[in-house]
View 1 (cartoon, rainbow, N blue to C red):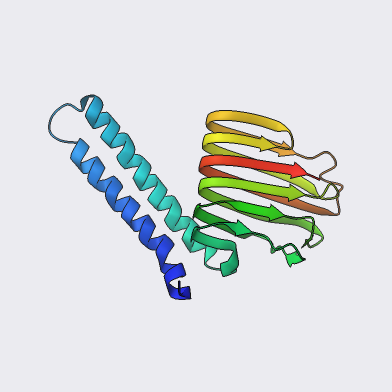
View 2 (cartoon, rainbow, N blue to C red):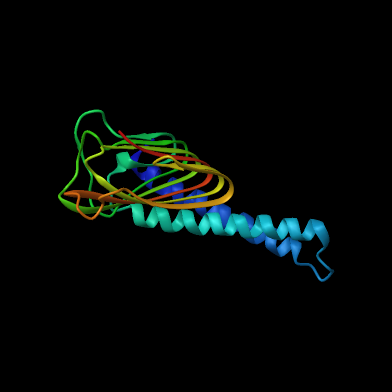
Length: 188
């Protein structure tokens, strides 16, 4: 796939989702009372519009960062050897998994912000114990396991901060989000 196609694909998928959502919303809001079928159509319409808008925002924000850290479909993995984590980086995939190992990453001193977005799939992050972490993890449908704190079900939202976060020389503030999937963060 060409670089141009990789840039355009997430936006195209997002616009299709918004269009599908609008069609479902218009179809479900006839002049009659909604009933169960109309309510379900409206819910799906709103969900598709929301997914499309979020995909557009994620694609717009991600454009500033390295191509190797974002994909429309596929898996995003950090390299085994040293790699640099940029402050305010966004790593995303629409359908696929994200696996990051920060043990070999070059983290700048101070606090680094990192956003990991995965619409359908799994996000796994390994962080060295010497790095302080402040994590907010959200899953609409699935499970969230952050530093041993685990929740499963619908609309899961966890905020965990490692002990000694403020005193750590290197700190990572992570925002993890998935629509349907699993989030896992461990310190090793």
